Length: 250
Image (cartoon, rainbow, N blue to C red; front, side, top):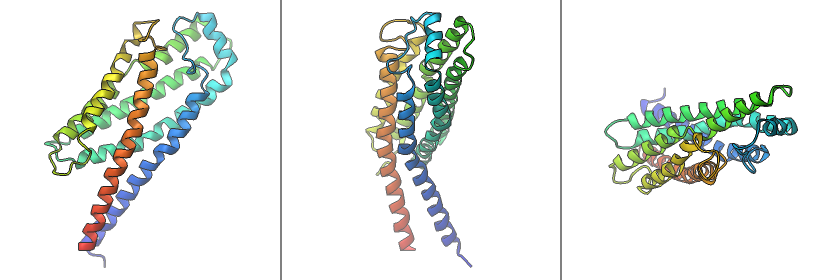
């Protein structure tokens, strides 16, 4: 018969193993998503909101194969970053905060962002679905895809703010995440916020193809994932070591 302590140790081991698997899925699927990003001909350079209906329709006719490949890849693999963000949620729950509301708010923001990302992919795929569709309808679907991809940054800002608040409120002597993660998250939020204006401008840095709305937003998100991967890995490693030390004492 196994004792309660042995069962708890086994459960902790399984839980940590799941965290490690979820964490290491990130670089694998991150590389796949980078390939999909580079494969989509509308990203390098970004399509212009100034393109006429005829130009947009021609783009979809000429690049239908790569559009389908890149967007199907995004659709299948983009969601595979969710396990990484769920590990962040678990670490937020481990923080010594007055309530776990920030962890659940972070979870809700991640789910909202993943949903909108999937919808943008579908709009691009629908635009490429029928080659005989009227150019004005293709342009409409293209607008929907780009605006859905670029403008809804509220959930990303919410993620960053919730994480920053959790880190600041964690009053443990040795916090789960380093204190600098809080201002780093706020900087990321500030970098992404201007992209919300891409629904207004057709030219300049705030247009959906602009330096701020597209490039700064994409780079800020990529930097956030890369930096947080290192932070979460270290936090998980400390958690693993603490579990092992506790087991040895028992």
